Length: 365
Ligand code: ZN
Ligand code: ZN
Ligand code: ZN
Image 1 (cartoon, rainbow, N blue to C red):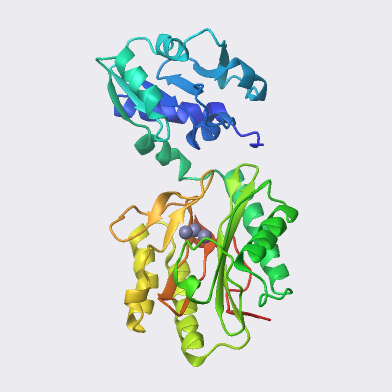
Image 2 (image 1 turned 45 degrees about the vertical axis):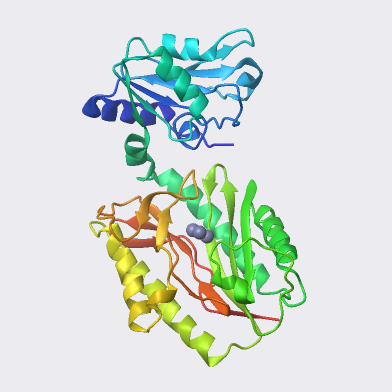
């Protein structure tokens, strides 16, 4: 499922950071760090899977025997150590670590495994792996950008198809299923979410599609995405059944300007929070500041939400290769909601826009 990247080079870069940060072992279990460094995605099971990466030495994939056939060899990036049902995988992982004084553990590692590791290594200091792994994951290699673009372009094709269908008379759930099917048909390996929020439900940013029937004269927020060869898509377009009221049209014009201002703000050296401010200033100036109730965006890659977060307080300077969403919204509780979401990449000279489907209010029947 994951493409053939240079996983050895990624592990070498991780080891380089381990030296700088005085970390002896990096241990990655379930979650997105594992496929990023190995191309293998573990099922979240009670049987331990862990990539054990000593600072000096070979990385080893400790994996249940029955899962081992799914682990693709990735050059000499790591060796595989399948464990049998009568073995204790914690003992195996610990034996691969020597006597570490510090171990960085992937955030989604089950606590039951972490507790056992801590008991087996009482003198070691355990820290989160994320401050290390995010340094690599948030700076995309050019092939990663290619996969993100392929996924984004596939969602753009879904938007074009949605323009052609009738919304009113369908339930949110029915439309959500249609969006998910189209997401697969347009080339994703997985459709991971399809938010359809109509009428007053549109004021809830992460509304779960329900049995509400879409009527004429409503905004409908469609926020969806999937995974293509392990890389995520995530886009939102706002539809309207029939012609909008002046209030909705006016608010949407503000939203479009805000989203455009945030895209235009993206450049190397610009702080992540500055992109948030660019969108927020437009919405606040138009009097809707109180109705923009979330951050402007999130990083995206092997996970749909990852670093860098486009939020006030994040002074991280953007660098070429950083990929993230720009998704301001305006939500009037009890009445309507609207959001425009694109995935963009910070480029050497500004912004590389991966989503290109029209950002206007999409009028449908
Ligand atoms: Zn969201
Ligand atoms: Zn989204
Ligand atoms: Zn998003």
